[in-house]
Picture 1 (cartoon, rainbow over the protein chains, first blue to last red):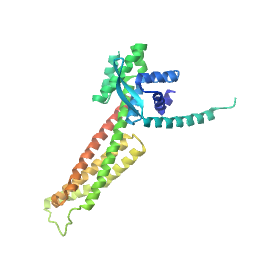
Picture 2: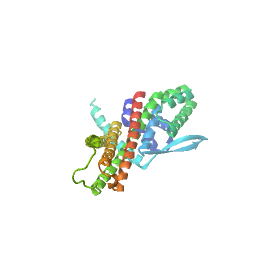
Picture 3: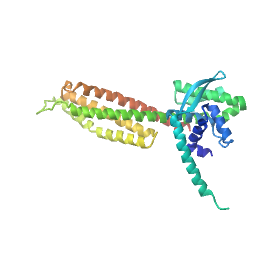
Picture 4: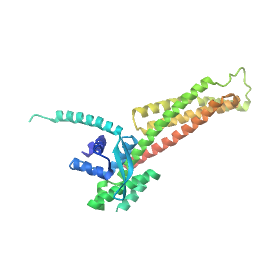
Length: 107
Length: 209
């Protein structure tokens, strides 16, 4: 699973996790862990370089916010990010369906 | 433990200033949040080794420099086309007959004119590098090759101008054409600086893995 994540699917997961609402890095990791039921155990620190790259590409935007008196960098999807998410979801579904058809063998 | 981790990461990150401060602030927030739940040692283990995190940031920053470089190079290419048009519209005065060139100037002029022919190699490097950078996105080496090509191209008009100063009166050139030489050189120099930065970050990303 980790190998698959390094091949670019981590981007799709992060964009999808942000689609439910803005979040800071730690909340995003928790969101990913909860929704995937712990399927992805990757070094959490690799999330931040990815978020910075997505921001460079204008797929996400970020700003400092104060939560419980602490400064946090909050990320949200941009319009461009939403379009990229739809495109990546379509690509993933078509890829996964193809794999499923190949590995589905008659019992 | 978290403080030690942050110090190590700070030393490994190939970036300074506000960008580094932002990265460290985000990492610290994350680690303190997680440490409150699972303890500092476990939070650090889950976050990953500092070298890994620093290498991912170096790769991201190299890609960013490379993208900026491609934009700058596209601007330089446009400036070059403008310059070519200006040279066509505002050529130096034609030289009729034999120019009296002092004996000591003959060899330097010949050498400069010969060197100026290298510009076609620089054109090839610049256009090839740009095309490759456009096809293979975030290819730092392609963008750097283009930057070197443009720097070479910037040097040749200056070379030609220097040659012209030896044999022709420089005031014969129009003002617009004259300042484009300098503008071009500045843009190309900026391109080389960005290219060096992109290559350094790319090397840092590979070294840290």
